[in-house]
Image (cartoon, rainbow, N blue to C red; front, side, top):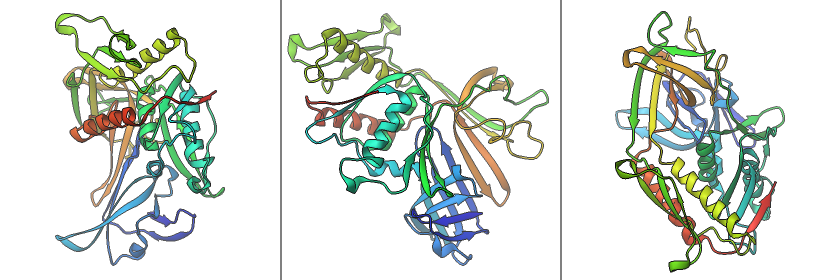
Length: 380
């Protein structure tokens, strides 16, 4: 069932008959949505760009329609595409307060993410930037202390980067009774002693799996260059690997400045180190594991939404590959088709593609081009 409503909570219709639905719940970034429905079906005309859909009454499966299309192979078919509701965070950028060139956030991971939302959606300086109906959910103070410096970057990219570095999830869901949308941060639970996915020995709740162990983008030594020029430029070195085992990364951190924040040299060098550790975290050896499961089907021992949830850590045992590991549920793709319902569960990091690598590089350059020397500091 597909419920259709406007961002103002006005309901436009319900679709019961459809050809297929794909809805991805993602821990770190907006998951994707795709619906195929015959144009003659009752309610199909209400599928319009900018409207919201809720799948099977599950508020965690609320998406924003961004594209409507047709296919030559079936002229009667409407192809609807979009994303999880949290895609709305790309509609604001992290512009600094008037008189400042960037904003520095200091606090726990959750506090920083909530403060970004407050500054650019919920309590912005410019009332034209206010996002109607959007509020913060319950504060749980999740994650360690962190320091984030931002300027002129899409908010969704800021939240995604923080989320991936610290293994913290975030979502935006509608509260139909309160008539508001809630931004919520979550950290997941370690259920590895309770939930097991295995391909043999009586459980066999894995339909298929794919696994990659890669060092393609691996770096373990970082040279971080901060403020100053030439011989007096501040620099820190992170990592001590040698020889064939040394994989170097150079980081231009000139956007980090000490004067306006009145930092001591030791404090400034510590901030450079933090930047280095953050960037190295993006270049670790990585394992990518995706499985199609029998979860939520009749007789399945463990069911998503009952026994485990997005962001949780579970145990995976693939005996045919000699693989046993704990891993985090980072995305769940729900698929409804003529043949029935299935889930594709992604564990650990998302395998990057060329476009995402290029985008990450462009983001780094944008920060360097737009960051200057004055800072607006927000401290917990």
